[in-house]
Each structure stands twice: as C-alpha cells, then as structure tokens.
Length: 230
Image 1 (cartoon, rainbow, N blue to C red):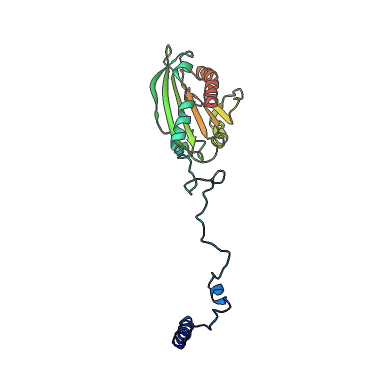
Image 2: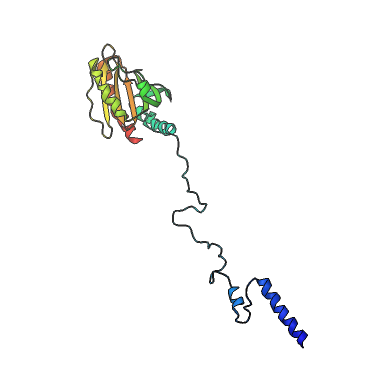
C-alpha cells in the first residue's frame, strides 16, 4: 500500500515539473488557462462574395470605351460631306471633271500676305467642275483648320478688298463667316465660307467678271447648305 502511494506522489511531481508551473491540478486552473488567449475569436471566414458597386468593373479595372477615330479621319469625313455633289451642281448646269481628291489649298491674293492657307488647313480635298454648255471652270476646295476656328481665317482674308473687288452676298444662315471677291485683272470670282473648323473655298472663272459674279452669287448658297448639312 505504501508502495502505491509513493508511486502516485512521484507521478504528480513529474507532471508538475514538465509543465513548468506549480501543481495546480487541485483547483482546475491548469485547464482553465489552457483556453485560447483571445476568447470568442474564431478562424476568419472567407470573404463573402457581394455584388460590385454600381458602375464598378467586375475585373477590378475600369472599363475603357472603344477607341475613337483619329482626328484626321474625322476631318476627312466632315470635309467629304461639305463637298458639293452632282445632285446639287447638275441642276445648276455643271458636270464633274475631276472628282474630289486630296489637295493643297490655293493661295490667297498677294495683298493678304499674313494668311497662308497651306499652313493653316489640313485634310483638304478639291473637286473640279465645268459648265455643261459654257465650259466655265468651277473649283471647290474644303479643308479643316489646323488650329482654332476657320472663321478667323475668313475675317483676316477680308483684307483682300485692298487688291480685289468685294462681292456682297446675303448672309449665310448657320455659318460663322464668309467673304467673296472678284480679282482685278482676271475675270474670276471667289468665296470663302467658314463653319467651325471647316473652310470652303469656291471659285468660278467665266469669260467676264460680270458673269463670274453672277454665278458666284448663285452658287455660294449651295456651299453654305453643304457646310450646314455636314
């Protein structure tokens, strides 16, 4: 009996020594301290899948709109719509000689030395026409201003009256500016019409200035309509 008691005492002492703590089995505090330090905490649950906020992208990156067309392509389309067509000029007695093609603008008279249309315009196209019965040449050029409004070019071109005779025209509804003139020493008349960044340059050269002036007065409203229809 004494042997069994001695073994029991030795067992208790061994357990106490291995735990590194006093013999606290009697009051149950040994097992109480063995609970997790942060009671009430649990293993973190996986993140819940919730619907993305309105307007957000499910991929985590902002959605991008389809790439827009280049400025040059847009200019080309607008220029094409502002060019006069056979359905417009045919009833006026003109037929196409050279269809619209890329071209450089024609220079202004020498007295307008500070306006270089070649530098000021881009994406230009030109078409050549001719009178069916009279063979009167008609040229239309349409280009887009490289910077700012084309109306500024027209306002500066008004100085042409210093070396040409201005042709008074009815105000073009819907356009920003226009100016027309007949050149001295050459029976050709010309009109510039601007709307936004677009500039139309129309010239007719009949055998006399009077006839050119008459035709220009007749055709200028057609150029205005084409600019407004773009």
